Length: 247
Ligand SMILES: [Mg+2]
Image (cartoon, rainbow, N blue to C red; front, side, top):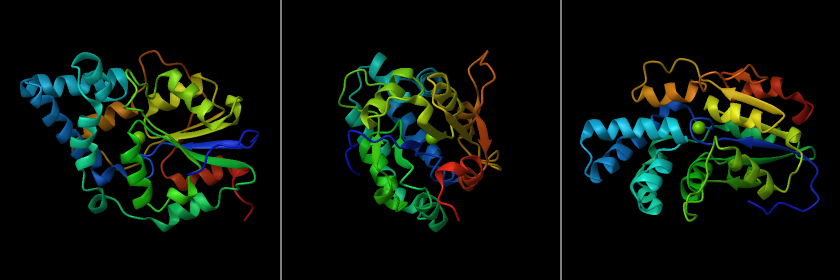
């Protein structure tokens, strides 16, 4: 993953990682949820209170850890080790050649490709490596757990920070895809030009479905916008033909 070059006026495509680059049917969110729940319990909360707070923080902040650091003085790195860090990811997700091909087919003379995640760097890099996409990603914007009161999606400041890190000033040049509708709406609100909501089909029966449900919900009173829905990432070829190599 390289550093952004100074005068790079190409478009930029931002991919969310979790539940976007792999199917939510991998149940990683569920496994993560169990660990987060255990973490809440280790803070001496009773189980009911724990699951309530987990959902509350996830809904309110887009990330349970954001609430934990804010209200419970939790060490984010300890949390990361025990939650994301302990997931047997290699057994849960695997390399998908068609996804790699999708990334390879993006015309790099026109667009750069970055990842934009609410996870910490170690988890993000691990996922990208397992999916064999790490060499096709030009940069990674993640939640920096080392920074006190770090920001995350869908906070507008997180998208602004992402643009700064990528050295891009024109938000209309930003392409973005995420499975969390609030994250997509937020990108749209800060002026990102081409926002796509990835909504996989057929996940209703999944365990841990409440988090997924929260991901698909919009803020109350959210206004109509130009967000496009796709059910597979391959549909991006049709939605964003201008960034793909001519076949
Ligand atoms: Mg996601």
